[in-house]
Amino acid sequence: MRPTCFCLPLGLLLLAGCAQPVDTTPVWQQTLPATGVEMELSNCTLLSEEPVPYVRSRDADETWQERPALEVEGVPVVTLHGVQAEDVELRFAENIAELYLYYDKMMPQVDLDYILTELPDGSLQYRLDTVYNFEFVVTTPGGSDTMLVICHREGLAAKNDYEK
Image (cartoon, rainbow, N blue to C red; front, top):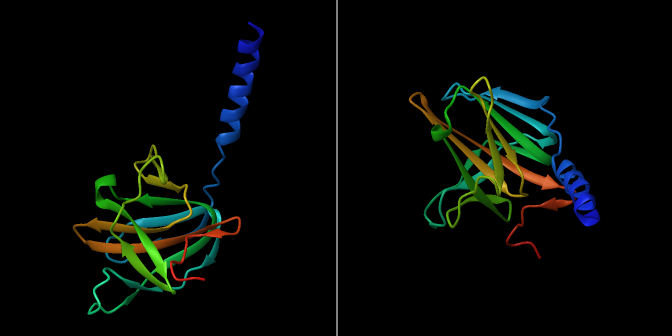
């Protein structure tokens, strides 16, 4: 009987330790130009909001383009106002020698790479739980917007495949 009493409080303490509070105070916010969707970034430190070079495929003929990007430290939370979950696609992006490339081998997995919560007002909240580069693609009848979120955490960053 005694081990059961001991395990229950220990289990509750472990669960309480896993549930990190989320600071929803925006460190960055913007109305996305094509869709009109309001995007907020919170629960992290914003390191940079400079655009990055990006390509959609490894095709040698494809020229790179600049994509908007948010480089962050911590466990970022992205909140989108005015859009439905089916209008948002999350993708991974590789970092290859300062060029970001759409990673088509695997898509981010809900409850593994990120936690999606629908807020009472209908907004969507994405807590990015892994240290990857996430590309948010928001598509509405008004158009499509993209935003890369480049994650760093406690000295870790998404791996650059060409760093030595």
